[in-house]
Length: 361
Image (cartoon, rainbow, N blue to C red; front, side, top):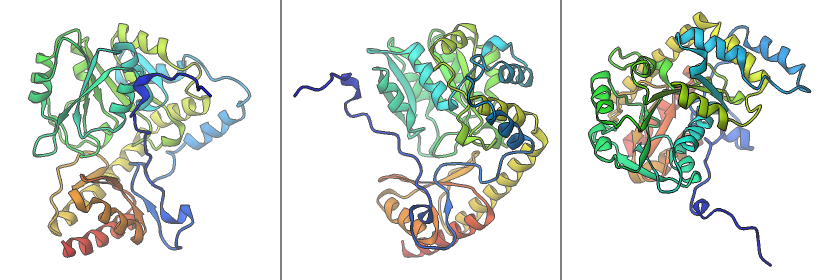
């Protein structure tokens, strides 16, 4: 019996794999269990957010605001940009997929560093475009010269993940501006800043400053990480009118729920609490990095809410040891593990496990 014909570009595309939940959530052994595999914020919603979401829940029988007007206005005022330059979507990854849809199709190329955000090759291939993966340099950072060299007449879009997921490394202002100067003006450069709030290095530019001067630069942000709204799926892009308008055309109608919209607005209005929470996670990040380095690990400089350990063939063993101890990390087979910085108790378990594992190497 014949089956429906599907697009050939779907052949070989991997399914996105979420971070594994703690063992106790899967019916494993009892005891402390922490999820350090998805870069989630370990803390509850910011003040006022739960109340806003609860109020919105009473209107589930109604469609949400298609234009996300209140959220768009709030974002435009927060970042000092025209409201027409703001486009919302189902998390920054949803908007990233739209960016590929509006720029790239069969025969076109999308350039990005590798390893970087694992959704990039998936959403590129879904559009029928060709992924061009440029290896990170020896310090686990974007090799911007090599990325510029990889641009061809078929290049339509370039992702620069800053800080980079999963390594946490960053691109600083001078090198990024040199790179942007080499990119043709008709190629869209997307600065994926999902972890922007955790950056403390003053030399790392705010992508919105660069967008203001360059019509071919767009910035991706999300409420999933620092703001702690991962489960609500709301992100946004800031881009010049032609790109932002195209994003609105390709958005899934009513994709961002009213609950998510109202929670995002409330989150933006709780900035003092956000800054306090981020400062606490950055302090924990410093403690984790220093402890790992003290154990003898090589840890790339991270400006995100996670750390990266390159383990090669020992990756799976380390992930298994962590899970047995009560924490799940994100393994990338044959390469390394990404470990989310979480609450102090979870970090302590991770550090004890890493120390014991290190002694066996």
